[in-house]
Image (cartoon, rainbow, N blue to C red):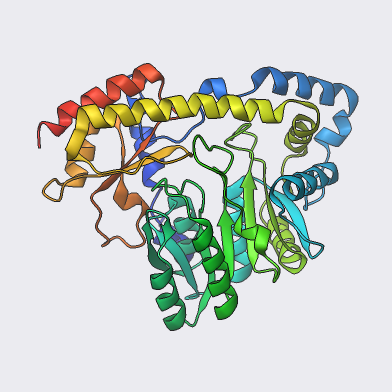
Length: 394
């Protein structure tokens, strides 16, 4: 049979990262292309104990349908946690629990975008978000990322000219893929520009807890007095991505529409998973676990950067991130980036070509993305030595 696909999906291509991971899933491939938590980053004993207690004490609650907005005790826990620790949330805001932070991006797009509406995004940016905006027939407009975040002068130029702009998408902490953190001055300026030009901000913060050096910077949502910031948070990087539990905090009117949109997608986030997260936040050492992850990943980041310096040297340019999971490396102009990535893969090291994160297929980049959370320390050493050997072929 000849299948006729919708316009929404027919022009979408599979995530380059997921395809690389499938193609290099053999055990002998060093996964610099991934972004998964390290196996030792999971609080397995905590989750095992919590799950057993839930199924013993409240099995029906865990196994029954839930409300679309999310398990009420978890919503309250998230509200209190975000207000106490980050000054996020006002009386005009509400919380909805989602099936991963990717669903926040999808729901925001579903309720805000009409065909040819504009999404302004950092360039480069997270491929999962870019493909979501494309799927809703949104038009992407990229703004360059400087060493301290999105270029505000270029952002204002775009806002002046793009009259159909609906929202600005930003990952302000340890941006994927660049690793850059937006400065406090730029966060305030971004908010003022959004307010001035009447557009929303989607603040995606999946890596905010993964800081290894430097000082925390307040969320953009913490200064939101106008209800223009949609804040997205996730438990994927600090607890488990497989549980698929995340949340968004936004104005009640936006949350009401996102709730309707979620009902049409998956009815609700799995209740058992929400109960696990709620119990873990309230009665287990969440802060201690996050500190353990930070120490682990910070050590791996230092190791990878030292090996970039020793094995690749002046062959690449990069800024060492203060947190997150990724390092963005720029190759020399005379080196074909895709050939370098393919040669690395042929030598059993998977890296992500920077083109996966660009706004348009014709956009050029000399960058590759490296991940340091997934490979072991031994894998980092071996993989970087192989990349050093690959470099010598160019």
